[in-house]
Length: 187
Picture 1 (cartoon, one colour):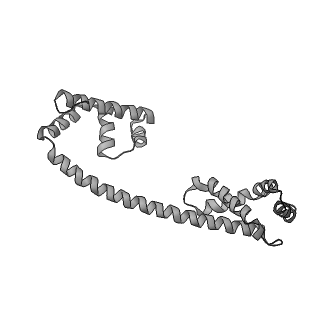
Picture 2: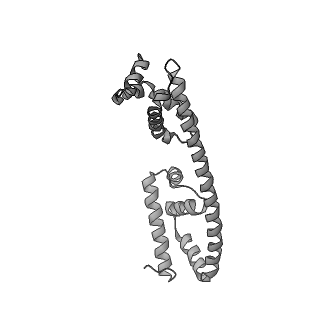
Picture 3: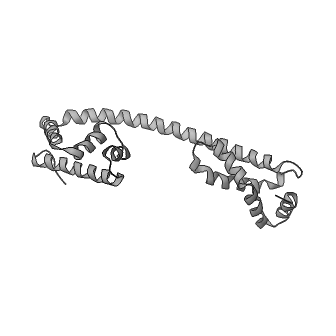
């Protein structure tokens, strides 16, 4: 950027609209610095704005004649490091919660299974055995093989929407079969 020192002096003298020129000239540098450092690429646009806000607030601390790119990159690195710490803390917390939830769910599932009528599991096996073709494949893949909807769609060579519809209909067929056997109530 030509006349960077003059532009900064004018901004500090009361013409903040000129700051757009600085943003335009250095935005790609800031984005590249952030993208190289943060774990979530989706956060780069917001972090870029944050860097330029901080730089604007601290513009008076910039020493004319020094390397402006190094100065703004230092701000970007600090913002990126803070974001990395936040991201890793959040991930760590989510993992802790996920583990805790899994333990609680596992304990409750065992209790629920023990309280189920014996004939319900037999009815469920019988109804599941009556499912055929893609209907059975979608239920088996989703519930027993832990496939995602996207994986099922690929395996069955259908669209994701079609796989969702198939899963919905398969659940309905299973529910209808259980209802006919008297093991499922619709409320």
